[in-house]
Length: 101
Image (cartoon, rainbow, N blue to C red; front, side, top):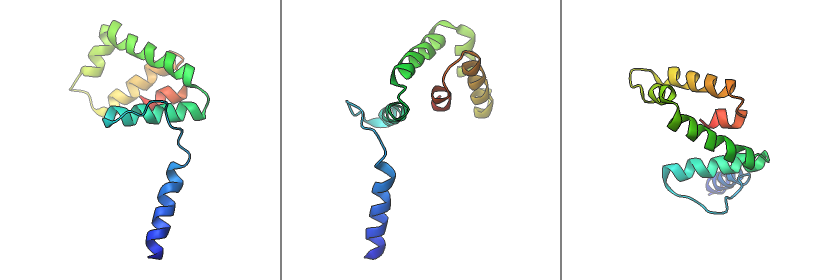
């Protein structure tokens, strides 16, 4: 019984620091969106994140080379990850956006 109480207490402790978004989203995309909102809110960077996520979307839509790189199935996940991080770092994106992507 004590083990159950302790485990429940620990489980709520890990989520107590989360910031709830104004509209809670569900599914895999929702989990990522909610987590990004919470992280951005904690660091007071919601406006920066909004702008940068729009810029990343525009980059994927408008830049054919970048889109081909992302969709290239012959590349390993680590190669894509380091390439995307390099592009975003060079583009001046915040560390929060880089870590999220």
